Structures are given as structure tokens and as C-alpha cells.
Image 1: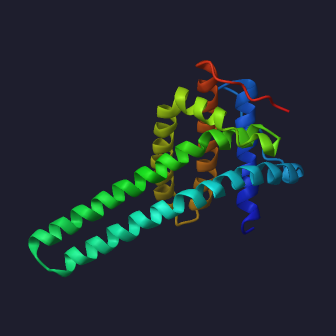
Image 2: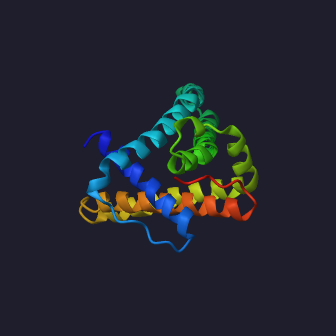
Image 3: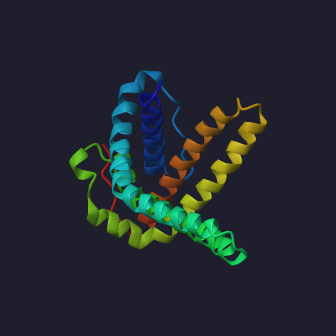
Amino acid sequence: VPLVGPVVAIGYQATVLEALARGGPNAAPPRFDFGRLADYLLRGLRMFVVSMLMMLAVSPVMFVIVLVGNLSGVLLFSQEQPVTNMMGCLVIGVVAVLFTAVTVGAVALVTPLIVRAALDRDLAGIFDFAFLRDFLARVGRQTVLAHLAHVGINILLFIVGVLACFVGVFPATAFGLLVQAHLFGQLYLLYLERGGRRIELA
């Protein structure tokens, strides 16, 4: 189902994260229950809103990086000289690194708000920037590493899915969502271990 389906899937991620928050790192993920679709949808909407606001804030920066980098690369390649071609390749490489760094940085920055959106039923309490600062101060490095690891895992899962006659892409995507939810849960538990502020669960 377009849009609604992914939001429901994100909402199920929230229940996995909640199970970890309640039961610790060895807690089993809850079964997907079709009777709870409305609950998944509401949880997913909170997380979706946070993600969309992050994308709206970061998109202009990413657009400028890509635009300036591509224009510079095209101008250098158009001169058809060995030196300018090498410089063009270097510019494109720098743009790719900057784009990746901004993307990972933005995702890491919004992670505390997504965790809060998954666990806090109060929409007004999600945008707690004091919690965001405290979370990143305690587990910011691990948050970046977790997202980089998740990107690598998703790439491997996608390759495996494509090798399985493309049909495997769908279960690989679902498994990737579970991995991401578990990483969020591990980061939250690590944050609590380091003296972080606990989110009151309903």
C-alpha cells in the first residue's frame, strides 16, 4: 500500500524498540499483529513526521552540494584536458563524500527524536531538544557508527535479494527494518547505561 504501508512498517519498528526498552537487549521482538494496524499507523506517523521535518531542513544543503559539485565537474570535464579531467574526478569524489557525511550526520542528529517518537505517546514531547543534546553527548559516536553499519547491512541484504531473482528484495527490506529498530533500541539502552534520561513508557 503506497505511503500507508511504509508508515505502518515504521510503526511496527516502534513496538520492537519498546520491547527492547522494557525487556532489555535480549527481549524478543513482538509478533506483527494485523489487529494493531491503527496503533502501528499512529506510531509510524509520529516517526514519519520527525523524519520529514529533518529531510526538509537538510534538503537545501544537499541540493547546493550536489548542484555546485556537478556544475564544477562538468566545467572541468568540458575542457578535455588530462589535468582538468583529474580535477573533475576529484571534485566529484569530494561531493560524494560530503553528500554521504551530511546524510549520515542528519540521520544521526534526528535519531534521538525518532527514538522519542517511538516511545513517547505525547506528540508535543517528541521535540525535546534537551533530550536530543543529552543523547548525542552520551552516545553520539555510537549513533553514527550504528547508521554506517546499517547502510552496509542494507547494501548486503539488497545484493542478496537481487541474486534471489529480485523476489528476495522484499524480505530483505523487511529484515533491514528489524535491524534498524534493534539498533535504535540498543542505542537507547546504551544511553540509559551511561546515565541518560529515561523516557516514560505508556
